[in-house]
Length: 193
Image (cartoon, rainbow, N blue to C red; front, side):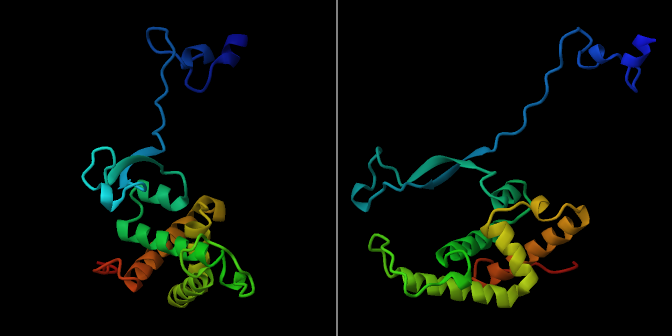
C-alpha cells in the first residue's frame, strides 16, 4: 500500500520521475542569461585620440535585459526599436522633470557640474511630459509612467491576463504615437491591416 501512495499520476514512483533511462538525474535546461553584449560609444573617447587602438570610439558592453520592463519587452521582441526609443526618451524626460510634473520647485538651486541650467532642463522636460499626456490621455500616460519611467512589469500592475494583454496593446500604440510626435518613427503602422 505504501508503494501505491508513492506513485504519482503517471504511475511512476517519485524516485524514478527525475531520472533518465540510464538512472542518472536529468539536467534541467539553463534559463537564458539576462546579459547581452551590445556595442556602445566609448565614454572615454576623445576626438584628439581618434584612430588610436587603445581608445576606440565604439566598445562592447554587457547590458542587463532585466534592468527595466522596457528592456525586457524589447529583448523578447515585443517592442519595435522606435517604440523602445520613444520609451527611453519618455523615461529621460520623466527623470529630468524630477519624477512628475508637479515636482518642479523653482526655488531649489542645484549644482549639476556646469552643464547648462538644470531648472530650464526640468521645465523643458515637464513641457514634453505635458505634451505626452495630451497626446495619449490620462490612462495611457499612467501606463507609460508605470512601465517606461518606473520600470514596473505589466504583471505587477494587474494580475489579470486579459487586462495585461489590453494594456500591452495600448502601450505599443501609445509608444507609436510618441515616436511619431518626436520624429523617431518615419512611417506609422496601419491599424487593422
